[in-house]
Length: 513
Image (cartoon, rainbow, N blue to C red):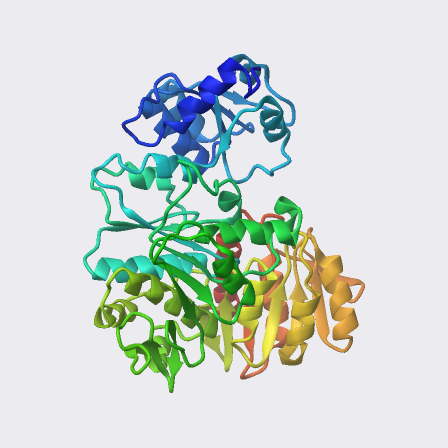
């Protein structure tokens, strides 16, 4: 493999530096794509369309995407990627496109660093190619430990009501590379970015993003097993604000997001816009006497505010939980930065519905409310969910991803009627409950669906069937049975969506409706 400092390496680097447009010459560029999920396939498909020499490396599977690669004429390797495949070495790649699931210390990425092969994520590739269909769309970037998807959907709904051609994309499920290739073209892309995707973004140079607006909703320890430390995770999140042209939106209740804005290198004229549930200052959006208002995007913001909606209206629309109201404020800030009128925002909010498995009311029976917040996949999300209810039977557990659950339990133990622990990482939860709530009734369901109360097995049932039955034993009128696992789902379920769906089904089966 040629080193980056060799003539071949310098030539490759010079060529990559000049690839800043769909209309640049990408033909025969040797590119290896790591992974064949939604992101990896979109990258391979895009590069094949550009005429690049593409090789895909992915774990074995029966995914139909392998069949599609064959149709596209793109070669691929299925195998154990912990060692460097001979096909990769033979390709002598000039560029590697990495899917978000590959840890920074993955053997193939270490090999690329050793050999001087540049590594891009799909977001950098999409930024360089964004001019395929007419003038490039403006980009609005959204990240945060929690609330990203809801905020992206809200902002896109507001912008669409304004008449903008808008695409919510990125980590929300639609690859940005698919969006930029849509023949209809867009005015705005609202791009959800995970910390994995942000990790691979350059801070400067031709691949550095220059978004219109950017937002970090909140930061709490998450994905530490991927990033290696809380500091690395926060540094990745902070990249969202780099080179922003119009509005850097931050959470006034989260000092980390303000620090990120203060430290970011932005374009001249970019403004810092605060959001919060309290009374807003100038250049903020917030709440005054139940009125959600804007004191940022009006000339006389030191004297006046503009009404966007009211808290009662949000409650009526199913958007009244405090953390969802914060998402509404964040999305409104993005939309207002693009000229969306307050009346348009009010109208858009009246018709917006949260996705399934996000504080979704499954049923109300005998005075007990059953809530599905399976999307609460980390302690920060579960904290917001628990805070919305006064008396809770909590279904918690799964894959904790290296984060500490202790502060969450300690903070909310006073509102718990009982708890049902599920998932593989049960020991940490069991110990925390024993320390902070030794008198609390806690049931445990092990990975084999065996139900425990203390140390005695009481039967074997499906996880959610057992969890719902036990929750019903604990719940009293006025209580909320809350599925807010504070953990990832892949230990026992295919996804958080499947976890929530099975909870919904189990509740309806139990209630006989």
